Length: 248
Image (cartoon, rainbow, N blue to C red; front, side, top):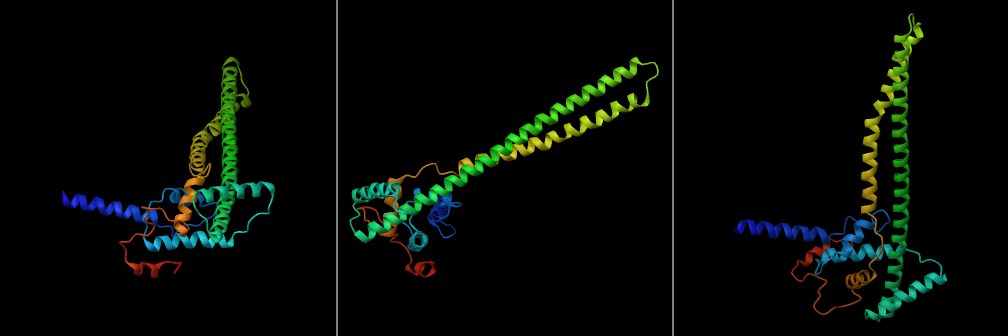
């Protein structure tokens, strides 16, 4: 019983360690679903090395990010975010500006992710439509050649002295019908594959951002906010882990 309990605790610790490890992720449109779902489900406290890795990833990406032109829509977006930051108690001007840039970066990455996801879905659905058209065409032509072959067989039996072409045409039509019906299993497999790919695209799509949770966790990770009772850093950790972080 003790061994089982110890094993379960070890497994839970490994799962938690994996959930807090962002070292193999990138903040890009392609990898946004993986990063976002992992980040939005993040639980504190975290190991120091993992916090530093995550800070480095966010800050490094934000440093390379160029904010868009100050259009009316973008100014309105910044104003709404500024109000949210003020309500969260982020009063430091430098931290507030950094958060605005970071959140704008998340919005643009999410937008690029959404466009790429919808383009991929459109391409796959067009391929599925072509597949169904090819399937229907193969069935239609296959049935046509079967009907044509049967018609010539009936004609052959009705004629007293059928010509060679009347005898050969049923064989040719049977071969053509077999050729079209032979395509059907491959088309079915292709359709199943395309269906799985569409489902995967839909599963990996981030439809909308949870701005409240996103602001809250970014502020905690970057050290711009402290919440009573919430420890970002795991106090029970070997500080030598800092030396193993990319940030260090």
